[in-house]
Structures are given as structure tokens and as C-alpha cells.
Amino acid sequence: MSAMRKQGVYSRRFAASDAASLVAPSNDSPADSRFHNPGVLRRASLMQEPVLVLNATYEPINVTAVRRAMVLLLKGVAQAEEMHNAEVHSAANAHKVPSVIRLLAYRHIPQQSRALSRKNILLRDRNTCQFCGQIFPSSELTLDHVVPRSRGGRSSWENLVACCYRCNNSKGDRTPEEAGFKLARRPRPFTLHTSRQLMRMIGHRDERWRKYLFY
Image (tube, rainbow, N blue to C red; front, top):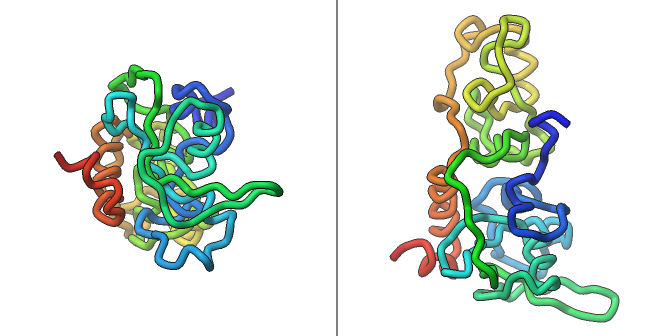
């Protein structure tokens, strides 16, 4: 299996099932979508909302989805530290939605970059088209090779960016300069430092995260 197909490899370091791993928040939508009115959120969207993951030492190490967080809680791998007012319902039970969870066993988190995957590139680029600057849900984004593969461009962190379909079609088999486009930012590998920057960005919008991120 190629590196681009290894969805969720990073999240499997937390020793649970491989369903619904690291995600961009809210139905794969931008990170600033929050619980303004939990009663009207669709369950599918609710299950993709971001949850802060702490190590056993209370160090923030990850952002995952509600679905993934609840799997960890039900497996006894983690415990909830902060909760939302929203609930999800099964046939027999109602479960509060976690905002912050903490792993019960310490996990060593390597400092190297995350696995190269579509999901991680969209997360790095914050679901923002790197050519037009607009924010999209992940279903409306693709990956673009800055230097086209026909020109020898590689599938790497430094040559792949989030791109909307319109810009992707307009750019075609050209470089950004040839297409008259300008990259919003230079693409870089997704490191632990990048991940913590994203945690802090989301933390500004969820007060429950702040005491774990700003100290």
C-alpha cells in the first residue's frame, strides 16, 4: 500500500481501532465550526467535530474526531476530561460528547512528520485551497502537485497542496507560475510543531481546551 493510502496511520499509535482517525474538524470542514446550537447539528457532522487528545501526562498530543474519541473511551483507553453539552444516542443509551480526552497509558510520540496522506495534507492546509484561499469541506477538495507529475513532480509534502476542483481544473498540467497562480504558503512537512499550532488555533475557539494549551 502506498504512503498516500495510509489514512489514519498516525492515530493508530493510540492503540485502538483504525476507524475515523485524525480529521479536520466538523464533517471534515474548517476548524472554526463549533457547537453554537448542538440541537440542530446532524449526528454525522457531530461525530466529526474535533476533540483534543492529551497524553497520560496531560500534554496535548493530537486532535481527533468525536467518533474516534468515543471509541477510545468505550475501549477504556482514555477518559473524558471535558465534555460538551451535546449528546449522541444509540438504541439504548445517550452519551455526552467529549471535548477533551486523556489517554490512561503514556504514549511515546515520535518527533518526525506524520504519514503522508490526503487527510493529513488537508489538515495541514486547514481545508483551504492553496491557490484561491477559500475554505472547503474535504469532499470539495483534491490534492494538486505543485510541479506536475508529467514534469517530474513527486508526491511529497513539499509538492502536494490542498486545492479546490475549480483551481485544479484551471491549473491543469502547468506550474502555478504558468497558470498565473500564487501559492498561499510554501508547502512543508506536517510535524509535531505544526500539529500544536493547529491545536492552539482551535483552542482559541473552545474555552475547554485553553487550560491544556496555554500554560
